[in-house]
Length: 400
Ligand code: PMP
Ligand code: GLU
Image 1 (cartoon, helix red, strand yellow):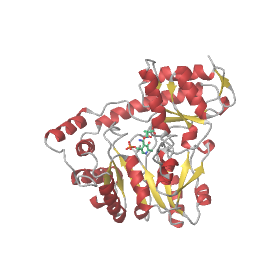
Image 2: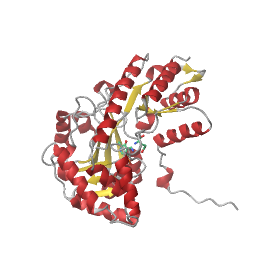
Image 3: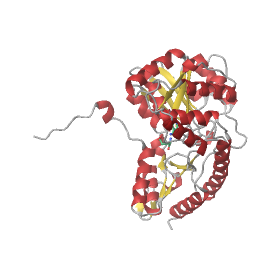
Image 4: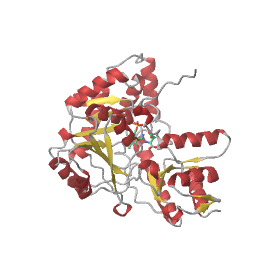
């Protein structure tokens, strides 16, 4: 008799992360000996700066190899509070911080802690791949609010108001945005805040790209906008993007004390503390010189300009201005329904898969971000890689 362990309904319904799936495909192709231009996953191509790595090694060698407080070491919580205060002039208590195994884990903690079955979470699309799945895992309902390229993929207060129902609990904001790189300015955030307060919503503000902001764009942290937001907002951040620390797995939240307490307890049962060594490395990242951030930012900025120029030169492709983060989200609608290399391109998924197969450029399909007709390409890659990748993309759409 053959026996199969049944998968729970909730996990059966879970989509795997498309960003990580495309990255795995690119790695597979690379391991077969092919040169692959990997613009799929969003992670800095830089190695973690030396002084941060040294702090990790020192932590290990001085015996910080044991369990810590589940919600994070006090030194790191204090450093998080101080950095936010010096950056944005806004003070949280140490008891409002929960350090987790990365911002993705923080987002899961938030939904698990405050979403009840059938609660609705408004997610403006295009959205980062994990939001909707994490809402569903917590029993909630993701309500996708489609934004338009013609409005730079920004949600308007009127669109927000229209999406609200009696079951709406949370608005998710990702600023700067993954996947579009678009940023809300202060006035736009004020207008959203007005609806949030009037309609009694709570906000998950994902600010993981707050330090990766280009040109004249100014990042504004959501709870600092006006009175009344601190008590209804949970901010997510972490070290992955700012300090090139994706593998260390450290993220955190700023939240009201009752939520922080429960998230800490949840974590104590679910995962215990985030890696002790990584927490000390994150402490060095926040308290040490920030020159490394400026160096990486200036490289990203140069790449952003290069990539925006290349995309706009290619017939039919367009993308909004990338104010922050390190992604270009480009319109490929002109090529849907056409054949490239003899293959019918009937979706953004097909476009990205064929681009990988035919030209070895790995990107992620817009459909994974709730936005068919687009593709996302990270520009956290060297200029040489970007140059070759965009040469290949241009050849691909010209079917050469
Ligand atoms: N939020 C956004 C918008 C992201 O792009 C990512 C990508 N990693 C995360 C959260 C999760 O980051 P972490 O590596 O800290 O889990
Ligand atoms: N956030 C990055 C991305 O969007 C990393 C991968 C992931 O965590 O999904 O590519």
